[in-house]
Length: 258
Image: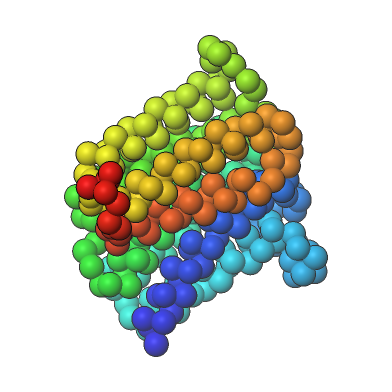
Protein backbone atom coordinates (compact mmCIF):
# COMPACT_ATOMS: atom_id res chain seq x y z
CA UNK A 1 0.00 0.00 0.00
CA UNK A 2 2.66 2.52 1.06
CA UNK A 3 4.91 1.52 -1.85
CA UNK A 4 2.05 2.29 -4.26
CA UNK A 5 1.54 5.68 -2.61
CA UNK A 6 5.26 6.48 -2.87
CA UNK A 7 5.25 5.46 -6.54
CA UNK A 8 2.23 7.72 -7.07
CA UNK A 9 4.14 10.47 -5.28
CA UNK A 10 7.09 10.11 -7.67
CA UNK A 11 4.68 10.39 -10.60
CA UNK A 12 3.06 13.49 -9.12
CA UNK A 13 6.41 15.16 -8.42
CA UNK A 14 7.66 14.51 -11.97
CA UNK A 15 4.34 15.52 -13.52
CA UNK A 16 4.24 18.73 -11.54
CA UNK A 17 7.57 19.81 -13.03
CA UNK A 18 6.39 19.15 -16.60
CA UNK A 19 3.04 20.88 -16.02
CA UNK A 20 5.01 23.84 -14.66
CA UNK A 21 6.71 23.95 -18.05
CA UNK A 22 3.30 24.03 -19.74
CA UNK A 23 2.29 26.94 -17.51
CA UNK A 24 5.30 28.92 -18.72
CA UNK A 25 5.15 27.74 -22.31
CA UNK A 26 1.54 28.75 -22.87
CA UNK A 27 1.53 31.98 -20.88
CA UNK A 28 -0.62 30.92 -17.91
CA UNK A 29 1.83 31.97 -15.19
CA UNK A 30 -0.45 34.67 -13.81
CA UNK A 31 -3.76 33.28 -15.09
CA UNK A 32 -4.97 32.87 -11.50
CA UNK A 33 -3.25 36.00 -10.21
CA UNK A 34 -0.89 36.04 -7.25
CA UNK A 35 -3.39 34.57 -4.80
CA UNK A 36 -2.40 31.01 -3.89
CA UNK A 37 -3.32 28.19 -3.88
CA UNK A 38 -7.00 28.41 -4.81
CA UNK A 39 -9.65 30.42 -6.55
CA UNK A 40 -13.31 29.52 -6.26
CA UNK A 41 -13.54 28.27 -9.84
CA UNK A 42 -10.23 26.39 -10.01
CA UNK A 43 -11.89 23.09 -10.97
CA UNK A 44 -13.83 24.78 -13.78
CA UNK A 45 -10.59 26.34 -15.06
CA UNK A 46 -8.85 22.95 -14.87
CA UNK A 47 -11.60 21.34 -16.98
CA UNK A 48 -11.17 24.15 -19.51
CA UNK A 49 -7.46 23.26 -19.76
CA UNK A 50 -5.77 25.95 -17.67
CA UNK A 51 -2.37 24.36 -16.82
CA UNK A 52 -1.87 26.70 -13.85
CA UNK A 53 -5.06 25.31 -12.31
CA UNK A 54 -3.77 21.77 -12.89
CA UNK A 55 -0.39 22.77 -11.45
CA UNK A 56 -2.02 23.85 -8.20
CA UNK A 57 -4.31 20.81 -8.04
CA UNK A 58 -1.38 18.42 -8.55
CA UNK A 59 0.63 20.31 -5.91
CA UNK A 60 -2.28 19.84 -3.47
CA UNK A 61 -2.48 16.11 -4.23
CA UNK A 62 1.27 15.88 -3.69
CA UNK A 63 0.89 17.42 -0.23
CA UNK A 64 -2.08 15.26 0.77
CA UNK A 65 -0.35 12.10 -0.42
CA UNK A 66 2.77 13.07 1.53
CA UNK A 67 0.68 13.29 4.72
CA UNK A 68 -0.85 9.87 3.99
CA UNK A 69 2.60 8.32 3.48
CA UNK A 70 3.84 9.85 6.74
CA UNK A 71 0.79 8.59 8.64
CA UNK A 72 1.10 5.04 7.28
CA UNK A 73 4.88 4.73 7.50
CA UNK A 74 6.49 7.40 9.71
CA UNK A 75 10.16 7.77 8.79
CA UNK A 76 12.88 10.33 8.24
CA UNK A 77 12.34 10.04 4.48
CA UNK A 78 8.61 10.75 4.84
CA UNK A 79 9.29 13.81 7.00
CA UNK A 80 11.93 15.02 4.54
CA UNK A 81 9.53 14.67 1.62
CA UNK A 82 6.73 16.51 3.40
CA UNK A 83 9.08 19.29 4.51
CA UNK A 84 10.36 19.77 0.97
CA UNK A 85 6.80 19.94 -0.36
CA UNK A 86 5.90 22.64 2.16
CA UNK A 87 8.94 24.76 1.28
CA UNK A 88 8.42 24.18 -2.44
CA UNK A 89 4.81 25.33 -2.10
CA UNK A 90 5.89 28.48 -0.26
CA UNK A 91 8.41 29.26 -2.98
CA UNK A 92 5.77 28.42 -5.58
CA UNK A 93 3.72 31.25 -4.17
CA UNK A 94 6.81 33.48 -4.24
CA UNK A 95 7.41 32.69 -7.94
CA UNK A 96 4.08 34.34 -8.76
CA UNK A 97 5.56 37.55 -7.42
CA UNK A 98 8.75 36.91 -9.38
CA UNK A 99 6.66 36.71 -12.57
CA UNK A 100 4.90 39.91 -11.56
CA UNK A 101 8.27 41.63 -11.13
CA UNK A 102 7.88 42.00 -7.36
CA UNK A 103 10.46 39.44 -6.15
CA UNK A 104 14.01 38.40 -7.17
CA UNK A 105 14.63 35.60 -9.66
CA UNK A 106 16.67 33.78 -7.01
CA UNK A 107 13.38 32.55 -5.55
CA UNK A 108 12.38 30.88 -8.81
CA UNK A 109 15.75 29.17 -8.99
CA UNK A 110 15.29 27.83 -5.46
CA UNK A 111 11.77 26.71 -6.35
CA UNK A 112 13.13 24.52 -9.15
CA UNK A 113 15.87 23.18 -6.90
CA UNK A 114 13.37 22.13 -4.24
CA UNK A 115 11.01 20.60 -6.83
CA UNK A 116 13.74 18.26 -8.06
CA UNK A 117 14.92 17.58 -4.49
CA UNK A 118 11.37 16.46 -3.70
CA UNK A 119 11.46 14.08 -6.66
CA UNK A 120 14.76 12.59 -5.48
CA UNK A 121 13.50 12.32 -1.90
CA UNK A 122 10.61 10.09 -2.96
CA UNK A 123 12.75 8.09 -5.37
CA UNK A 124 14.99 7.31 -2.41
CA UNK A 125 11.94 6.45 -0.30
CA UNK A 126 10.76 4.13 -3.06
CA UNK A 127 13.87 1.99 -2.79
CA UNK A 128 14.26 2.76 0.95
CA UNK A 129 17.79 3.99 0.37
CA UNK A 130 20.04 6.47 2.14
CA UNK A 131 18.84 9.87 3.37
CA UNK A 132 18.54 12.62 0.78
CA UNK A 133 21.40 14.68 2.21
CA UNK A 134 23.82 11.75 2.22
CA UNK A 135 22.77 10.76 -1.30
CA UNK A 136 23.26 14.24 -2.74
CA UNK A 137 26.61 14.60 -0.98
CA UNK A 138 28.00 11.52 -2.71
CA UNK A 139 26.20 11.65 -6.09
CA UNK A 140 28.71 13.94 -7.81
CA UNK A 141 26.90 14.40 -11.17
CA UNK A 142 23.86 15.61 -9.24
CA UNK A 143 25.80 18.67 -8.11
CA UNK A 144 26.20 20.08 -11.61
CA UNK A 145 22.70 18.89 -12.57
CA UNK A 146 21.08 20.75 -9.68
CA UNK A 147 23.19 23.81 -10.47
CA UNK A 148 21.79 23.75 -14.01
CA UNK A 149 18.25 23.44 -12.62
CA UNK A 150 18.78 26.33 -10.21
CA UNK A 151 20.17 28.63 -12.90
CA UNK A 152 17.47 27.57 -15.36
CA UNK A 153 14.87 28.72 -12.84
CA UNK A 154 16.71 32.01 -12.49
CA UNK A 155 16.66 32.47 -16.28
CA UNK A 156 12.87 32.13 -16.19
CA UNK A 157 12.65 34.45 -13.20
CA UNK A 158 14.77 37.10 -14.89
CA UNK A 159 12.40 37.08 -17.86
CA UNK A 160 9.41 37.67 -15.63
CA UNK A 161 6.05 37.46 -17.37
CA UNK A 162 6.13 37.80 -21.13
CA UNK A 163 9.61 39.28 -21.46
CA UNK A 164 12.23 38.08 -23.97
CA UNK A 165 15.84 37.42 -23.03
CA UNK A 166 16.91 39.31 -26.13
CA UNK A 167 19.45 38.39 -28.80
CA UNK A 168 23.01 39.39 -27.96
CA UNK A 169 26.67 38.94 -28.77
CA UNK A 170 27.95 40.43 -25.51
CA UNK A 171 25.58 40.15 -22.51
CA UNK A 172 24.15 43.52 -21.48
CA UNK A 173 21.28 42.73 -19.13
CA UNK A 174 21.08 40.68 -15.93
CA UNK A 175 18.87 38.16 -17.73
CA UNK A 176 21.42 37.67 -20.48
CA UNK A 177 24.24 37.20 -17.96
CA UNK A 178 22.21 34.60 -16.07
CA UNK A 179 21.52 32.79 -19.37
CA UNK A 180 25.28 32.72 -20.11
CA UNK A 181 26.12 31.37 -16.63
CA UNK A 182 23.34 28.79 -17.08
CA UNK A 183 24.99 27.75 -20.35
CA UNK A 184 28.36 27.40 -18.64
CA UNK A 185 26.75 25.21 -15.98
CA UNK A 186 25.29 23.02 -18.74
CA UNK A 187 28.79 22.71 -20.24
CA UNK A 188 30.18 21.69 -16.83
CA UNK A 189 27.43 19.08 -16.50
CA UNK A 190 28.14 17.82 -20.03
CA UNK A 191 31.85 17.42 -19.27
CA UNK A 192 31.04 15.68 -15.98
CA UNK A 193 28.85 13.10 -17.72
CA UNK A 194 31.35 12.67 -20.57
CA UNK A 195 34.11 11.97 -18.03
CA UNK A 196 31.96 9.27 -16.41
CA UNK A 197 31.09 7.49 -19.67
CA UNK A 198 29.82 4.78 -20.02
CA UNK A 199 28.21 5.25 -16.59
CA UNK A 200 25.15 7.51 -16.94
CA UNK A 201 25.48 7.60 -20.73
CA UNK A 202 21.68 7.73 -21.10
CA UNK A 203 21.72 10.99 -19.14
CA UNK A 204 24.48 12.21 -21.46
CA UNK A 205 22.46 11.37 -24.58
CA UNK A 206 19.37 13.13 -23.22
CA UNK A 207 21.48 16.14 -22.27
CA UNK A 208 22.88 16.38 -25.79
CA UNK A 209 19.31 16.47 -27.11
CA UNK A 210 18.35 19.02 -24.48
CA UNK A 211 21.18 21.35 -25.48
CA UNK A 212 19.67 21.48 -28.97
CA UNK A 213 16.21 22.10 -27.54
CA UNK A 214 17.72 24.74 -25.27
CA UNK A 215 18.86 26.83 -28.23
CA UNK A 216 15.47 26.38 -29.89
CA UNK A 217 13.82 27.45 -26.63
CA UNK A 218 15.99 30.57 -26.53
CA UNK A 219 14.80 31.48 -30.03
CA UNK A 220 11.17 30.73 -29.14
CA UNK A 221 11.32 32.90 -26.02
CA UNK A 222 12.70 35.81 -28.02
CA UNK A 223 10.22 35.33 -30.86
CA UNK A 224 7.13 35.08 -28.65
CA UNK A 225 8.01 35.77 -25.04
CA UNK A 226 4.45 35.58 -23.68
CA UNK A 227 3.73 32.14 -25.25
CA UNK A 228 6.94 30.38 -26.37
CA UNK A 229 4.96 27.16 -26.73
CA UNK A 230 5.59 23.42 -26.55
CA UNK A 231 9.39 23.71 -26.38
CA UNK A 232 9.23 24.78 -22.73
CA UNK A 233 7.45 21.66 -21.37
CA UNK A 234 9.56 19.47 -23.66
CA UNK A 235 12.66 21.09 -22.17
CA UNK A 236 11.35 20.26 -18.68
CA UNK A 237 10.42 16.72 -19.73
CA UNK A 238 14.00 16.13 -20.88
CA UNK A 239 15.27 17.46 -17.53
CA UNK A 240 13.04 14.99 -15.71
CA UNK A 241 14.37 12.25 -17.99
CA UNK A 242 17.93 13.21 -17.06
CA UNK A 243 16.98 13.10 -13.37
CA UNK A 244 15.65 9.54 -13.66
CA UNK A 245 18.61 8.45 -15.82
CA UNK A 246 21.07 9.79 -13.24
CA UNK A 247 19.25 8.29 -10.29
CA UNK A 248 19.02 4.81 -11.80
CA UNK A 249 22.43 5.03 -13.59
CA UNK A 250 20.81 4.07 -16.89
CA UNK A 251 23.19 2.88 -19.62
CA UNK A 252 22.91 1.80 -23.22
CA UNK A 253 25.56 0.30 -25.47
CA UNK A 254 26.70 3.06 -27.82
CA UNK A 255 30.11 2.40 -29.47
CA UNK A 256 31.25 6.01 -29.52
CA UNK A 257 30.22 6.50 -25.90
CA UNK A 258 32.17 3.54 -24.60
